[in-house]
Length: 89
Image (tube, rainbow, N blue to C red; front, side, top):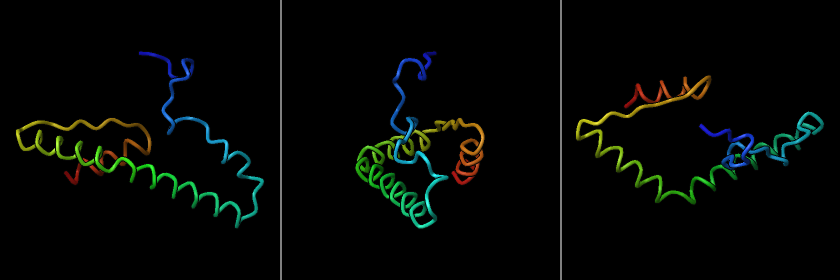
């Protein structure tokens, strides 16, 4: 397994966000504005990948209908959210 921290191959979602440095120094309106802007950026990124996500959903659904299994992995909050999501499937 490669060490992503050393190789520099971190996906953008795991890289340091320089825009959020110094959150503790911002006044409340600036903090809220930054957090909302970052959420907007995240939504925009997902919207740009709509076709790719839809293809993945269709492929997963087809495999489940054919008796396949979907495995979720996660730790901490991600693991708990995966468990909740898997229960709904």
